[in-house]
Image 1: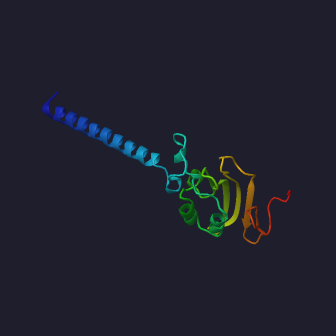
Image 2: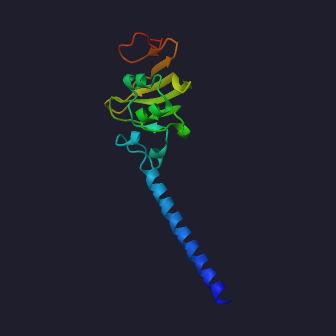
Image 3: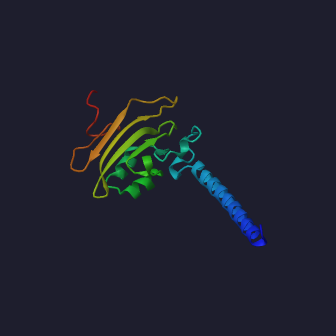
Length: 162
């Protein structure tokens, strides 16, 4: 092997070493980023390892005011309000994992028309002081449809069995 071939081999080895180091750093940064979760997941519950990385899980309480704020919202506004991008990074399905007493957790499903929320369906329970779940509550809203709400004081309840 002459000196030129040895020089090329050294250059290839250095390049490969650099790529391995760079790749390791990139993977470590990606893992650190994923492990930090999303803004809507900060400080309300201790998740199972990896659970806080799910893009559809938020810690926001699904209050009636929060649900109203989603009506006619764009996907970007929905993501900002809930602090997570949604299942499969699409702003269509969300779960709340807030376990603080008084919080409403459950799920929300959204449909869009012309880039805005046109239908909203939510099912949730309220966390009681002893950490148990209350009876299930529904909240339904749609453009041009009669909505309903099982929140206290609503004029039209979704649950007609009571």
